Image (cartoon, rainbow, N blue to C red; front, side, top):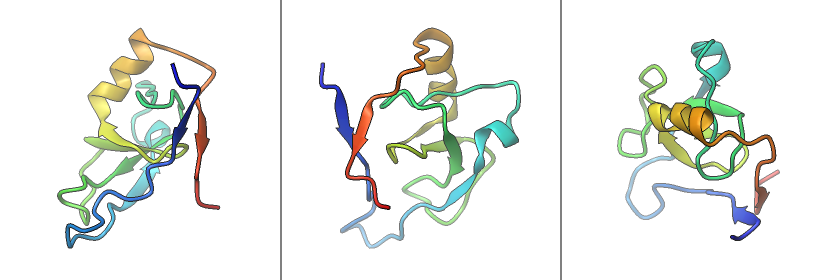
Length: 97
């Protein structure tokens, strides 16, 4: 398995849509429901707009990883924490400073 992944910089490049907005940390919005990124294993995630509807954040239906930039479903991130917990996230390269 590769021990590093590349930061997901863009979702809508070439689609004529803006980049999805970032929201509040999931830990603030849904205390008691810890999440983990299914891509890199980070626990630092924020509510996000969906790439197909980049202007509107609806609760925590969609979440985005602060460390690797990937967008996923809240339920998937919650299940990832429950069944595939890790405290050592993968190394992320190419993250903008």
